Image 1 (tube, rainbow, N blue to C red):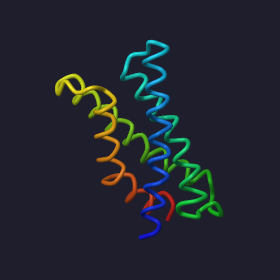
Image 2: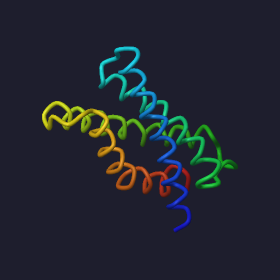
Image 3: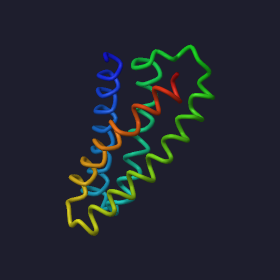
Length: 123
């Protein structure tokens, strides 16, 4: 159970980075919200991989190349799901992009990322 809480702390940290980058790109650089969301998700993914490998799952002794390949596979599906749901909620649900992003992050963080990282990427 402790691993689950550490994973959620890593996810919250990565999500914070993701949201900060997304917000800054939209607010100060005039970037389209969907592009900013994708760039934020990429940045958050890098932070999350490093934290998960070293701190959450203690898997830094395993082959980083193999872990990175598995992480990228899981993460690419996450990126597609994240971006797609943010788009749908923002465009058709008329929800602010940051609120959409938050809702999707919680749903995918608990329901998708944790289980695949624990059982596939960092096992």
